[in-house]
Amino acid sequence: MSRNKVLVSSDENISKKIKRSEIDTAATRELAMIRRRIRTFFWEVTQVS
Image (cartoon, rainbow, N blue to C red; front, side):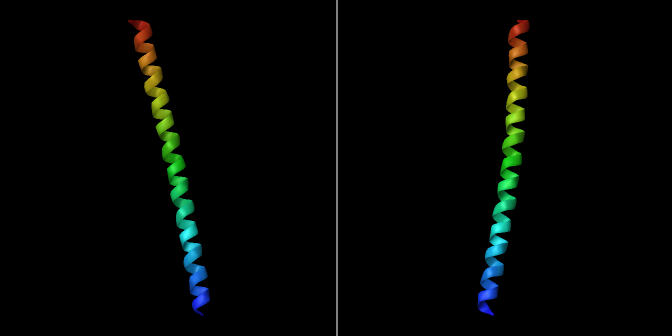
């Protein structure tokens, strides 16, 4: 009985870690897109001036 509880809790921890890593990858992807946008914006500004 206690062994089953341990297995369930470990599964929940793993799923939480997976969800967290998915959120992290999504956040890093958005950050990269924002950085790229800022870089292109600054590059265009410097080209104009």
